[in-house]
Length: 66
Image 1 (cartoon, rainbow, N blue to C red):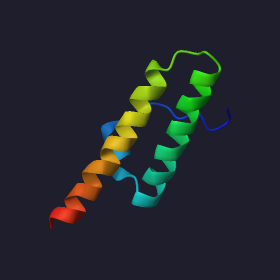
Image 2: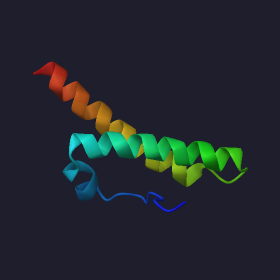
Image 3: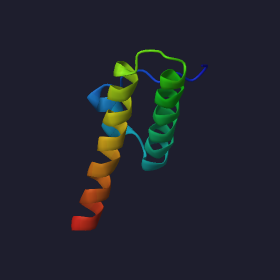
Image 4: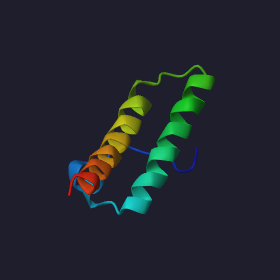
């Protein structure tokens, strides 16, 4: 896959604009699904997906509590 996501650093993650973060959540999920379908290990892909997804959840929570 050309745009394989790598584990982001904390600064990279929090520095992403919301639009880019959402794109990466969907891309990470797609890559996780593809790895699962191909019988590959999904451990790293799961971690990457969860990092992006959790950051998105945090941002949405902050927006709704203010």
